[in-house]
Image (cartoon, rainbow, N blue to C red; front, side, top):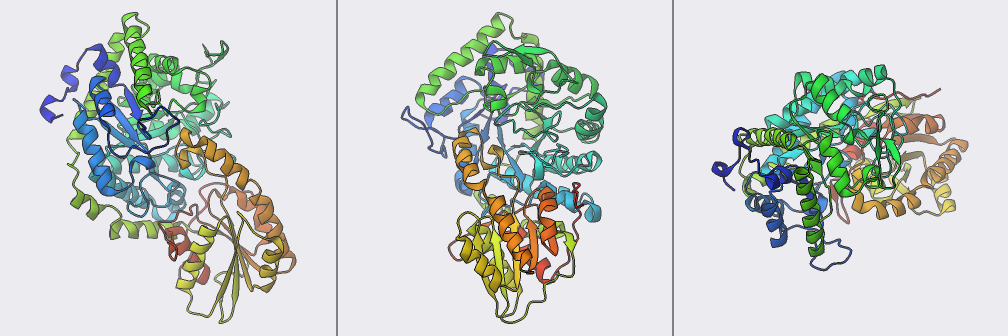
Amino acid sequence: MTLSTFVSADNADTNIRHLIGQKLMLDFRYFCQQDTHCRQPMTELPEELAQLIEQYHIGGVILFAENVQKTSQIIDLTKALQQASDTPLFISIDQEGGRVARINRAEATAFTGNMSIGATYQKHGEKYATSVANAIGKELNSLGINVNFAPTVDVNANPHNPVINVRAFGEDPKIVAQLGAAQVKAFEQNGVISALKHFPGHGDTHVDSHTGLPRVDHTLAQIKQQDLYPFSQIIKQQQPGMIMTAHIQYPALDSSNVTNKQGENMIRPATMSRAIMHDLLRGKMHYQGVTITDALDMAGISDFFTPLDAVLETFNAGVDIALMPIQVRTPADLNQFKTFFEALENAVKSERLNRQELIQSNQRIAKLKANMLSKQVTPSLAIAKSILGNPKHRQIEANLALDAITEVKNVGLLPMQIKDGDHIHLIMPDRQKATALKQALLSEVDKKLTISMTSLQAFKPQRAKQAILDANWVISAHASPLQSAAEIGGMDDLAELESYEIAKQQQPKALYELMLFAHTHKKASLFISLRAPYEIAKYAPFNQAVLASYAYNVDVATENDVRGPAFTALAKVIVGHAKAHGQLPVSIDLE
């Protein structure tokens, strides 16, 4: 593929195969030569997939952590993907920062996520939204990745939200809109298309659309003032290249029914709603860019629709690109894809799909690709190595982590006045996090200090209680809610996610019992909320001090060295080498 052969928006190909192919974004997360359950990461483009991209004029691909393991390998892969296509490919990724970051954290800069940015807003305004997106944009562009499914501008109004929580900037729609607009501008100035998500809003749900179909029963006034507000403001101020749909029912916006594969009538998810995706987004909100579905293999769609029907409904709703419409994991799947693609061709011929709308959609896609090419750099290993995780980006990461630390409660405990011979006992979700905080504390304290650890994954209660009795200080921490499929990776990880939840679900009870034991024995106690801070209301009464970090990612993890920016920041605040300047970006009832 060369620029001279690129089909521009002005002379977009009207061939049916091209029209359909450009509207598909596939994932090649795994690919195996054997027709078995495949978990072999696709790190080099096999000839079969290169031929599929070329033969079907595929418009884009999405990369997962399995596909992006090392800098040199990523560059080789993105180059091979582009060379396989006769038109420029959208090469996309979920690199939000914080808990959703696909590229190896030891090489790329992951940062501490949106809610930590929200916690800095009162003091720093848009500073970190801009600097973080600038850094992520530069790093992605250097690798040949040109679409980032970010920022998340859902307004997290539900403390029980299992999938958004710390991926949101906070609960104030105006602040979310301001920070989201800053990130859109920064991403796109650095040659990376941004994709606002999840339209019309995933913030007030208690169901994860990876595992079910959420429903939002807000009034029209609520929807306008809360859910839609960030999208409408950003479209006016800094129109993004893409907007991603949400697999959510919004009866106040569209209460019409669609028949699912079980033959039942159900309210249309927003992804399949023309009233939402066309009439509202394009008509009333005047969005002119490209729309893309959230992954169509998510249970919010795949539990109710076949891949073909999902794509037909999506396209007829006016959405431009179907993301992950059908799995391609083995050579046998190539035949299934052929059947699927031919069915879409026949749908155009039989007028189940409107050809003129496909042409208009292709024109939007071609226009965005032409704009993308004007800002895209040619990936170079030397340049990428100088950009990924460079000292400037790591310093921004460290500064954000520190400026986000929030002191929610402090009754004469912080900063800890640690003396020679003191004993600190840590109660943490797992050994890695305990080790990270232990090493961070030891690096900040110039005293002879004993630090013992209890991992909530596996511990002996009596031994843990004895350690509490022996300690001068008890520091406990928790991360709530558990990781979602979006954070772990995607729908391929659901089996692992279920076993993970079973293993983790007893942690809050164990933590509560140990915390109560320390409180009963009048131990100087600090609680740290490592993720969504809503849990603080439950644990605050048993601690003299409470901190929130909104993050717990580890960037370095070897046998003798475990480090992460949030743990370094926490240690500095705990011992008084820095102050906690963050402000809670969501409401917590401490009464």
